[in-house]
Length: 262
Image 1 (spheres, rainbow, N blue to C red):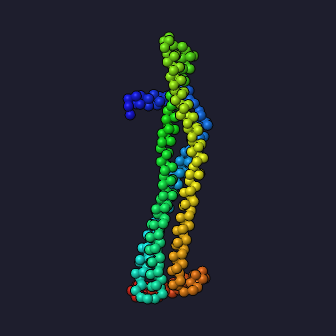
Image 2 (tube, rainbow, N blue to C red):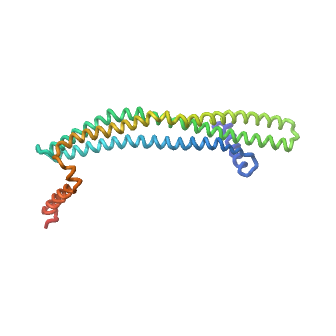
Image 3 (tube, one colour):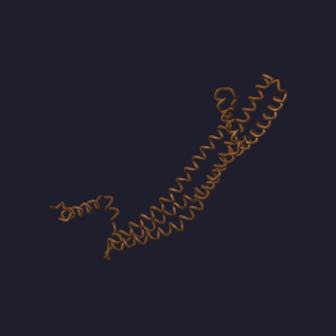
């Protein structure tokens, strides 16, 4: 920061303090506060959307990888040619294909159509925030100049140069502040209005890719199901599979090696 910038920061800190004690006029601009509040809410929601959209892709990758590891392990349980072994091998092939398709058909398109557009929108926020902060500083300067001019008008100085100088400072501060203020009051509502048409394509792409991922998984797992005997789903719903599992567990308990049957 330059020496001039440092002095301005000190002066503005003093202005803020004197506004709290009523020594300097303070502008209350409810119209701008309302627009700023809407913008801040949009910023918060968009940053959260970026975070969750990335988390979704990470979750899809983790799910795909976990399926592949499970399939590898389950397939390793079997070394015969039984229906169960064929089902395990079919499951392994299915999840491997899903893992490959996820990388090829979900990952890159999702980045291009969802993460990158949202990220680009978020990249504008720091510059907008700098402009809002600059407006705040220029408003402090304007309030300080207006107060100084008012006090000189109420109690004229013996120095004839002070009032014209204060008038010039007031006019300059007013022009700078109003230019920034008009820009923000015009463009912040436009930004808010544009967020929906901007994000619409990303939302549609996200839904389509989620549907594709679910459909691919359903199709692949449907192919694995044909290796199981008919009626397994109904037996599960009726609780018969629970009985089968409990029966096998009971046989395990009766084994001496488990330390339970003794």
